[in-house]
Length: 139
Image (cartoon, rainbow, N blue to C red):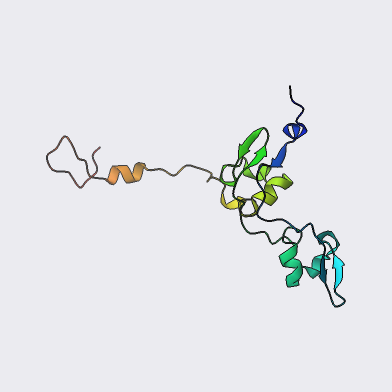
């Protein structure tokens, strides 16, 4: 019924990302030249004015954004990115909005096998139907 072109997009920001480059021009360099983030050379990202003004371009975003983004027809937060997370992080919007999660995505992967509690459970004393718990596992 409504023509909403963004609804057909795979991903877009629902809320403003916390890490974003300034859309404004700024002066930098020895001659105080006006520049924009896309004109900064990668080796100039060590300059504080460039790092502060262009954190996304310089690749120094270090936090996840508060709020939500739209991925594949659903609103989601950084701690609820669709799995596999590494696939979600391939989207530029996810990578920008969830900089910390996407940078540390290898730390979020599940282990190859679940942790077994059976060794813990069998070492616990039984509580019933005996009046006093035993300190040896039952068989």
